[in-house]
Amino acid sequence: MNSLIILCNGAFPTEPYPLYLLDSAEGVVCCDGALKRWVEYNPSAQPLAVVGDMDSIPPELKERYKDCLYPESEQDYNDLTKAMRWVLREHPEVQEITILGATGLREDHTIGNLGLLMEYTRLFDLGERRVSMVSDYGTAFAITDSCDLHLGEGRRISLFSADNSLKVTSEGLQWPTDDVVFDAWWKATLNRTSAPIVSLHFNHPSALLVMVD
Image 1 (cartoon, rainbow, N blue to C red):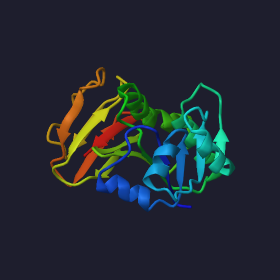
Image 2 (image 1 turned 135 degrees about the vertical axis):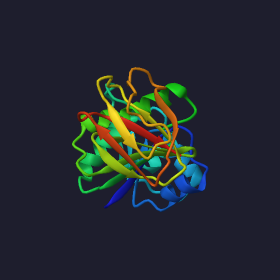
Image 3 (image 1 turned 45 degrees about the vertical axis):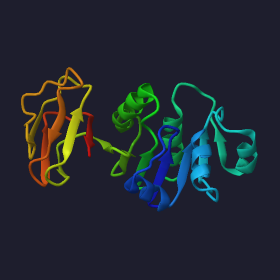
Image 4 (image 1 turned 180 degrees about the vertical axis):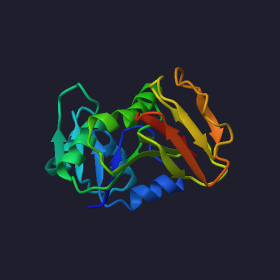
């Protein structure tokens, strides 16, 4: 299996692109209560797995999908992280993991889940795997070192980092990041690509969150 969807219990996608990703997925792993929303969207849906503490699933769905429930009661990590852990353990061959429904509804969940994209670069050995979070409003992913991003010209882009020692020089952005100190979340937001390829050069490896739409 080359690619999988992890479906969270936030705002269910409504725009064509995230729905296309969901409809064409090789497999879908639901985070706990997301199972109910996915079944409402696609009554014949058969998840690859349902992972979480199972506190948000109606009893009838627990019975119907009992063969693919993977309960995890520990509370050190949220259901998204538990689902990521399950995917990497059970499907180490997967090369692309797309997370849907991770934003919206609750702002604290949105901030936390976006931050987890950076944290996963430290928690897991992702190698060459591509992990992204897609919503109706854009795509987010984390990078850890200098790279070229083939994004296209004229796209909105924001960069976030929790490392105030990180320096990122850039090419292909309307407002270069060369002098940005990442000591506040807003510092490298609301930018725009000015070339088809954006080149980012790090002074040392570190996690950087990229959001584009």
